[in-house]
Length: 127
Image (cartoon, rainbow, N blue to C red; front, side):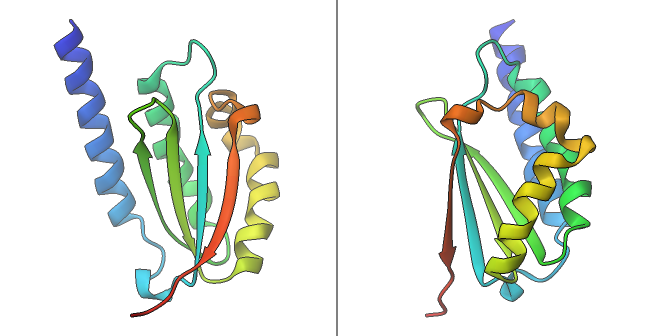
């Protein structure tokens, strides 16, 4: 049973990566800002349900001005990291309160422990 759950989680993560790659609204080289969110899930949250909700957020974010792409990762300690790429800091900062208020995000946000959430913005540099 544990192997089946691990396989399902791995498949969901692979699907997330594939859909994220397909869902890019703009070429990644248009990004100038990285939004870095780190958080835990609420106690008792089902990771598979969280991944399903995460996939549904692509359609929401694609409608936001300045959205480029996003990626999700899970840390070894069980916390999650979402990296979102934006065309400007203004677009990134405007999207966060809009995302929180959007009725389509309620299922996703119900699984995220808001007290654990940290958000940082960074500028991308070309080398």
